[in-house]
Image (cartoon, rainbow, N blue to C red):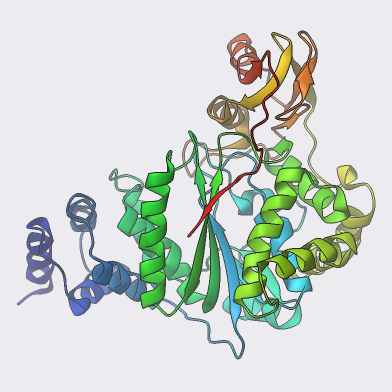
Length: 440
């Protein structure tokens, strides 16, 4: 039977809702990587998977095949990682990874770029002059052995199949298929040899999941498949209806990450770092329980060791030592990209702040150049916003609550939309502002 006949038979089988065997899935992945089948056939398989779904075993098999489609790291020690489904102002990985490394946890973190309304950790780091996210296998290995941490892009030799399939998912309306998302996330973690992982699943209007029920179902799929791969996974469901911290935008989020590592983080950023980091500390055996892990994370930020580890990581990934030192211990604004204009958005009425419309904020951020509509779009790394008020604050009509940093002019429509993004109540809310909703 010809290879073309093989793939047609697999497509027909999946189209009918039949379960594919491990070897059949492996064959499909290998044919994809070797460019042995047409793009139309790859798209057809992805659509069949999106419509018919994947069983637990199929998802685990797909994940393994994708992980082994490139280099797989083998370490002499256990390594940990944290992943987030993303949201406005989500810069948590940037201070968390060096904080964990400062406590002896090895963190090989493969991250992604932003697309549409979701920001990318790699884009944020590239606002640091000289920071390299594209590293060779040898360089990634050196980062872990010498520094204990990296935040980088998957190389061409890592999870090759994921790159191919992701590019087709983006243009075939299959990007939101849970089985394919699970495979994409876990294959990269498996390729880096991750043993313990915390997944931050965001819930909100700008998130992949809008309800706890949807997010919980996804969490159990992730846990089931992580277990089949021998990976210890804990999912933390967190609120994403409001931006995280005060700063949103690539360069500005590096600024807030440095402030956090200097011990000046906002309440919600500190909570997320401590909860997610504390989980990994206890999962890896570095702490007796989550509470001790949280205390250790808090202490390593307060005593400056996490900031120093961030400086080491920057130098290891190509940043000039003088630049890295200035960023951490001097005037970071002299190093980072700065927008040419700022515009304050005023509160339209007085009262107590109960929230912000993240969807409106995300759309304007994207249109100002802080995000991309397509992977080819060039970013404006200086564009962003700084919140001057947070939930629980009182605001007066006509006073600034948001400062927009921009290089292109704000339109009157954008100003109007942002003006309506602040949610204000006449009465002070007594509800919790914790972002932690559920742990699975």
